[in-house]
Image 1 (cartoon, rainbow, N blue to C red):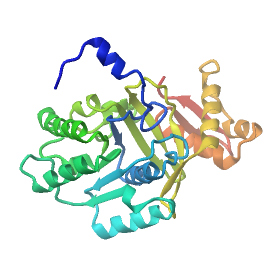
Image 2 (cartoon, rainbow, N blue to C red; image 1 turned 60 degrees about the vertical axis):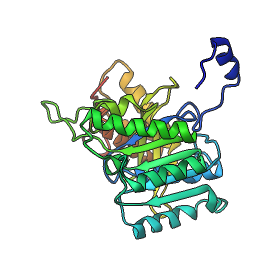
Image 3 (cartoon, rainbow, N blue to C red; image 1 turned 90 degrees about the vertical axis):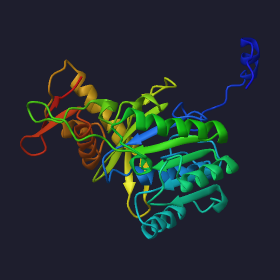
Length: 316
């Protein structure tokens, strides 16, 4: 390790590299935490990301990625079930080279200094120097307690050393705390404070993304982006036959219309479905937009008569 003058340091970094996931979602040698409730589609989303990195295709069809080698370590389901997922996902990326997606399926691996399995994995990652390393889920890899700042710090120190040695970026998959409710019984949205465990989990990564899924799709919400890039919530459609998520641009557009209606004087609005249909949205798209905004605790939707619905803003 050699100390540099500030001018030498600036000269070395005259060419600013783009991020691994653009715009500004995940920098090279960066860290991203993706969290959400079970069955919310997180594992499918990161498996899709691995194949996007391998092929250079945009993630969800929206976020540009730098092509490279992806390593995905999953520690939650059996090998047979995971094999079926990979087989289905790979069919969506026929141009992907098998060499560009490396996998490890293990129910016993722990990030502990005495773990031979972890030592073998880190040695392999340093040798391969992948562009991206995905670890899914965090709690199965952690040796210790997610609520312990000290235990998490040991995990993150190990991952930081791995980033420094291999040059990779890391995506960690995690879960939220149990839902909290206000006096009226409504779910209180605490943003990234909903991440399960110690606050070290949101201090360490460069980006924190929350993923949710409904019957019609889901949403990807940006709780924190250290690159300071403004990112709007991405509405998603999910295809269970292909395990793929796609950006639902129509629903996102309908979301903006609904929010604009609420912002108009700050008063609740009725007959929202009719208004959206009048503006050219299908009834199914309008209903998905309302369901998505309600799931994100942005508004309350109260049925009235027929297709009329009363909207009330929950949180500013």
